[in-house]
Length: 140
Picture 1 (cartoon, one colour):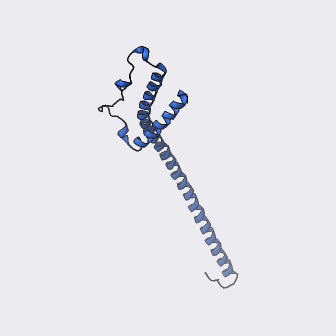
Picture 2: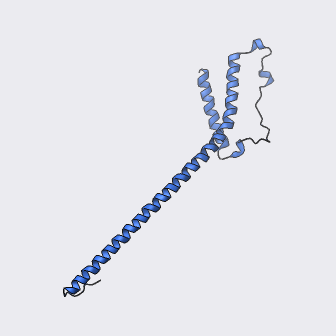
């Protein structure tokens, strides 16, 4: 497995872990007054001299640590920002839908009333014509 695949795998694990720990909680966002614990390297893991350093391994480890810290902080902030934006969009959509429903309902009621008035006028007209022509009025 190359280092890019390893980073992608680690990033996926970190996202999943961050989603579980920060879901629905503002506790994941550090406050300015809080002390944030940063993981440090264990002294036993550090090389004794600079010549003994495996620079590619060290670079990979630093990338992993930076990625882990960024994901743990940024996902909570991004989630909150996304949630706020979605709430605004959903609010506008709900207002638009309510306005459209109100307009449609108003037009439907107008049409129903107009049809009922027309039917009643037609019935009254037919009854007047029947009475004038000498026929007995029909049942209502």
